[in-house]
Amino acid sequence: AQSVTQLDSQVPVFEEAPVELRCNYSSSVSVYLFWYVQYPNQGLQLLLKYLSGSTLVESINGFEAEFNKSQTSFHLRKPSVHISDTAEYFCAVSPSGGYNKLIFGAGTRLAVHP
Amino acid sequence: GAGVSQSPRYKVAKRGQDVALRCDPISGHVSLFWYQQALGQGPEFLTYFQNEAQLDKSGLPSDRFFAERPEGSVSTLKIQRTQQEDSAVYLCASSLVGGGNTEAFFGQGTRLTVV
Image 1: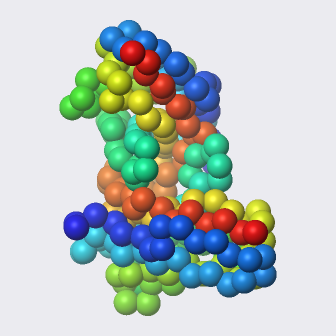
Image 2: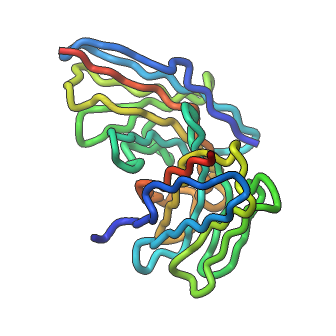
């Protein structure tokens, strides 16, 4: 079985400051790792994913996440946030050997203030 | 539009009433998932279809929950004799194929409130 823990339910930050959203997972099998974002009144959108290869993955809007197998973590970072990054962020895993059934964390609400 | 469409967006049901939630996946997508998202929580898996076959229903919380996808496209999640604990956002997602590395596309969800 898999589980995902997002250590912070809310993260307030000022515009242009760096941010890190933490995610740890537990699994007895190999997994793929994902970050999804949910903007207000919108559906979940894939932000980035780790499947294999380089442990550092990037999104098109400046976010990056690093897979750390020894610490079973997949923290999300951005060096300088914008007001438009205000959203709910969900970390998720899916077993690498099966279909893409996603196990989500509880989410982190990122609030960017001017 | 070309995305996953869910209807209705909002549903208020009296306790004991039956409800039906509809999902129109992206055309051609083989896999379809239903998730339940309680307030302040992440989505939780309910059930999975590959075409018309329901391959995994391990997440359905009780026998009051039933899902179908008879022609391998549109899916319906039915909840019988709704209870207050059924209040949640119900999300549908589809993907082109079923592999664990395949991106799932989510609809905006149906917010069910049981009063």
